[in-house]
Length: 118
Image (cartoon, rainbow, N blue to C red; front, side):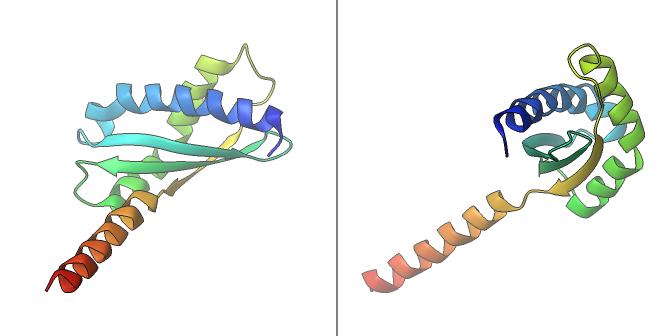
């Protein structure tokens, strides 16, 4: 990504984090949603938003809820960044499972240490 895309992605990431915090109790059942990264297309018209969930009962259901309300979220984003940008990007939300992968690898390493200790 270019510097321009990275800066734009950081702006989107910060503002979406605020939006998810504000909408947390009303739409997402008090699940804590973290925007872990944003990848923006070169024309700044499309953004992939990677989300991590805490205190969520079902990640897939929560992602479906977010996608269902994506127009509202995009509208809220537009209200916050409309004076900074020309185009409000289309948002595509994805689950960031890197944290799950880290926990899985830590568990594997712990099992290896236990086997070596015997």
